[in-house]
Image (cartoon, rainbow, N blue to C red; front, side):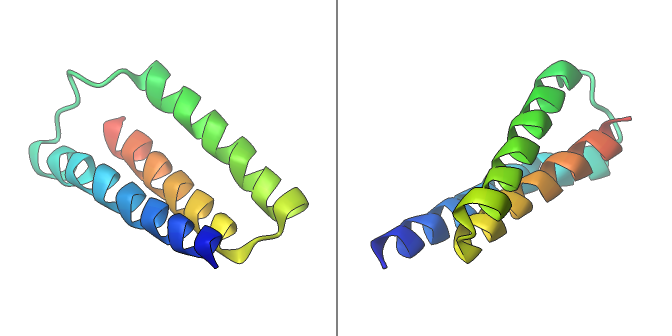
Length: 81
């Protein structure tokens, strides 16, 4: 139960942390100050963690949180191009 609560907090923080960057990219259509290599590393990390969550952990909240993070990372990279 505590684990699900903490993963819920992580999910909310993940959403909140990527949302402002996504909005800024959509509004300004400029990504001069973003490091694409950092974003790609975050995607690799996120994909690996999502695969772990699905194949090893099988915890629904962990799968949700890692998928949410991966979604926002991909969106930001797509917008960045």
